[in-house]
Image (cartoon, rainbow, N blue to C red; front, side, top):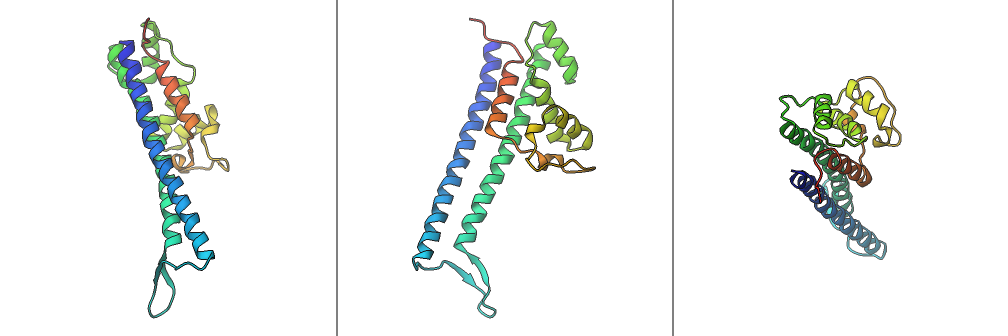
Length: 193
């Protein structure tokens, strides 16, 4: 059982890393292409774009296309991290319901049942639960609880206000994802050698 559980979360981690690496490469390649285009422009290279034939304003140009592509890829990285954070917590929740024969997915009940089965629970698992609830419900109740236990997952200029978009305020890093995967991996059956 431990091997199956650990393999599942390791596969989720590997999937995240593969997808994240692909997006990071896209960002790097597009940034390099943008820098090359800008350097070419500075040296008198041909402008690529389209102007309105009557008014003369720019409809689009290659520099803006590169900038939009970089912005979209960066946004995708953020969404990917949030999706895998949710997937990791829900993996724990589903597996522990099965292993501990629990009818409910209530976190506290699952933790009690897991401890009764002899499974260790990572001290960071509660933070992962709070993060998942905030991402899922995006409300003041969940967000305030997450802020109390893990303020580091919020963007640096974060200021709490009523009825805010908590989902948007969360900015996860690769280090946060590693912590999430580790907390889930350490909170269930373990491989016995």
